[in-house]
Image (cartoon, rainbow, N blue to C red; front, side, top):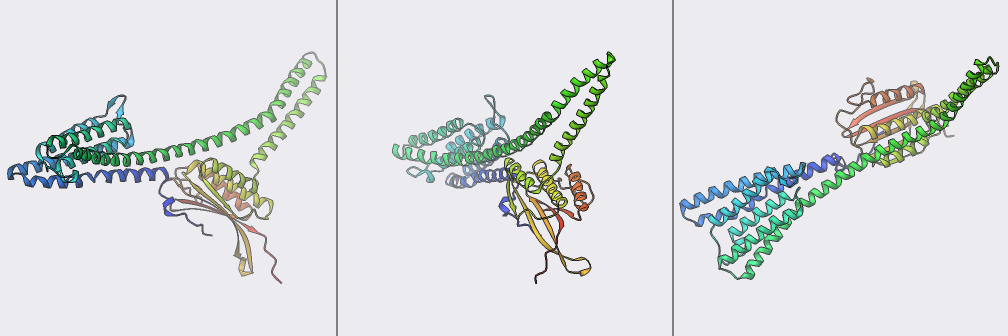
Length: 431
């Protein structure tokens, strides 16, 4: 049978997909900086020929170098902090120094446009773009208060430059500073919000892993508690009666033999109780395993959906299907980065042997996304590729073969599909 596949947006790789998307987005955002410099660079054409060429070369070189430093800062900040203790990393120091150099070159080489707005003044425009790009790169991993200091300094430079030009009133200069602040805030907040989303996704993934480990630890504690309750009392009684039998034997009292008979009886009863407890864990009931699958997968942060009802089959076949659910869920928790699991029970018709009519079979399909590279077992060969889950699947194949069933396992894209089939009683033909 075929299993409905989720939308492509759910198969992007989980946390790694979000990180890759955010990293590429921030890189592309950095590459917008040179385009904002085009107006400022073209303004040098108003200068004298020799000075125009020199100013153009200097501004282009500084602009490209600043863009490269912003890209390096974003890359470093995405993978770790930009400050070690109170000392900034070298890439931050170089970026700030180059930002100051760009600001100085813009003031020294670009001609002022008296009376123009922010977008009509090449000096103010280049300073605003350079400062916004610097703040955006620092906002990836630096505290906001430090980014605010750099942004405030850029705004003050723009306002002071416009006031000192003497060509426009103070109100216009303040407006230019406000526009610069908005531009710096937009660039910084975009980078900061992107990193906040990545951090939230990372914490959710960590919580999912912790929940999965806690679910396994809780099950181990429950088993340990049950075994202690069953075996502890019996072993204590065996120890006491053994000491009594030894003391009676040393005195030549024939009652020592009676005590040893009781020890043997206690040991046999304890062994029987232990086997009963183990059988309770080893024995599998399909309805119980489906309920347990829902609980374990949800605790591990995996959305699970069960389609179909528990079939009316012989006990050995139901137990074999229950083992498929147990092993499949265990492999999902331990060997995948799944976010979604689907368990389907379907009654399907099959051709009868030798063409003598049609029979039925029950198909149980367990599918999940988040398959890790190299972690898909080869069931037919009885081997695994990078995981220990294959041995469990080979055991399932043997269990199913004992009741006339079969097991199929395949990877479809980033999904792993495990399908077990067992024969079902044929329905009575309609009159």
